Image (cartoon, rainbow, N blue to C red; front, top):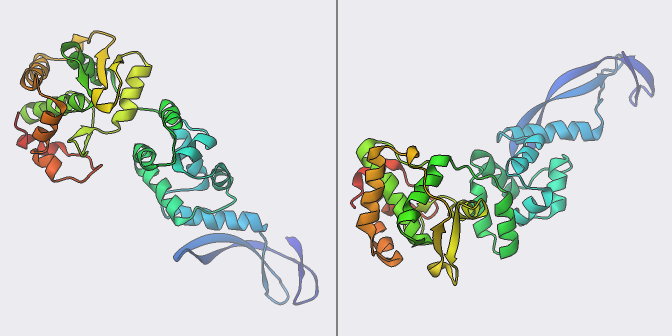
Amino acid sequence: MEKMYCFECDKEVMGEVKLKKTKYTIHGREVVVDDFVFTCPICGTEYDFDELDEGLYRIYNAYLSLFGLSFEKLKEIRESLNLSQELFAEAMGWSKKTITRYENAESLPQKEYLDTYISLLNNKDNIYNILKNNKNLSKEKYYKILDRINVDIDYKSINVILYILNKVILNRTQLMKYLFASDFLNYKLFNKAISNFKYAHAPFGPIVNNQDALLNLLIKQDYIKLASSIDDSAMLFAPLQDADLSCFNEDEINILNKIIDSFKGMSAKDLSKWSHKFIGWIKTKDGEIIDFKYASELEV
């Protein structure tokens, strides 16, 4: 039993606090929340028993749950990217104060911000597209954020790059086409890619998804180096280590060698034109992942 003042009866009364399911409409969406209510035993008047902040927290969290989110999840999404509130705010183009309010459950994300959180919840790799589209981000800050973001790459995939670069020094565009062709040809013949890379549609043909983060990581961890960096077209990559051949079976080695031999002497422009004929590139839009189901259409 709890004591509370009843304004209808104009006196303090003793009554029970019970849970009551209450419907609220937030941004046009209906949510149901368990509210604590006090019912006057004399007149039956109901009063909210929650502190205002506690009630709003449950209502807003119920709204976020419609999208698979919660205030705690907002923080988890940022931390999964290994970014501080300040760097996450820089990456998003938001203010740090905005991030703090959301993570402290002081404010409900507006639709634009909510959509961004949903995008990152579904695939944290979407952070790279967000960074690419953030025109207000300085180059220095861009690479600082890339340095902090966790990039998933396995040992074998690293060695695919090392194997190719140990055979031929390539610029960014060329390297992307060598990797793409190797994985899709191997998939075409053996129903399995050599690396664990995913490939996205880009203006100059298929590229490894999040190529900037990948290359930045490999340079940072001393797998490869820049042999020339006058501009992007002259940015040549060279290996700093030999490839571990134990990663590959005989068929995979043959595929890698076939691509290296077939592409020998082809410029980045030549390789881009070749890749633009690939049906998987034609049928996808900029930024979309190219499904390996198109591997059967690859012609080298």
